[in-house]
Length: 335
Image (cartoon, rainbow, N blue to C red):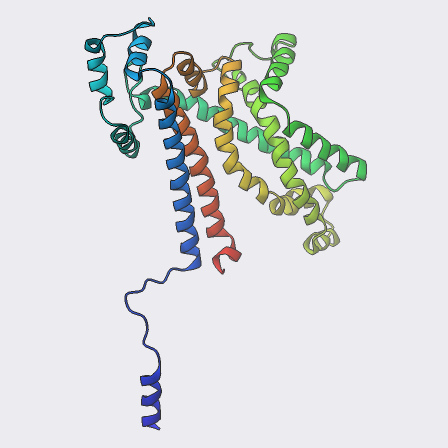
């Protein structure tokens, strides 16, 4: 018997040594991180290529932007600019220096203001983040109210709710902002025409971005909401005597909002980019107005810095949502 056991142990394959086993959950996290890094690298590369693809000499452009005069420059005038920005180096070296700067958190130096781009953005990003947060809160409130009110009702009410979702999701923010401005600021006088510093100054810009977002999230939430209304646990809750509104808010909504949670990661990046429209239309501070001013003055480092920042916001928020699902969803945990 002992000899038989020893023989079986000898015949059994030895465990692999030096081979790292990675769980599906860990592999999924690594895949998400690699994908996020690739997207950020692509956005940064596109921003760099946008700078070098413009016609003309970059040093001449920088000097003309700083002086406000468009004219030809002598090599002696261009030499300090070339040395400051490394424009005399080969394009590959410039690209690697650019990527290295991004890894260090360096977005470059403004052509016009002659100071770090990160400092320019940092002065205005707080106002944009405030607008983004208020927009998300309003979008969720509008979506929850409208879906809870109309989903799972009669055929006409369901059609009305779905139709409003579709229409609002397709509204152009610039057009919507003008309508809100004409009606509630110029017509009724409830809000300032030009963005005020108080709480009432942020309502119309936030609604400009929140209404289409609420329609978009409502489209994703409505189907799941109506499916959850027919779930067995809802029937049990009704049999216990719970009212319709309580069932919708306490049970159905909790299961139906997962698609909207997923979309919120995308919505943060979308709202930051949409702030360009709202801040310009309502004359509010923020990186949107900084971007428009930089485009008008051909201040390319500021433009590309904001582009990279918005891309990073998209990637990071979606990455956090994906990682949250990997951590929370038991189906992903056990896969």
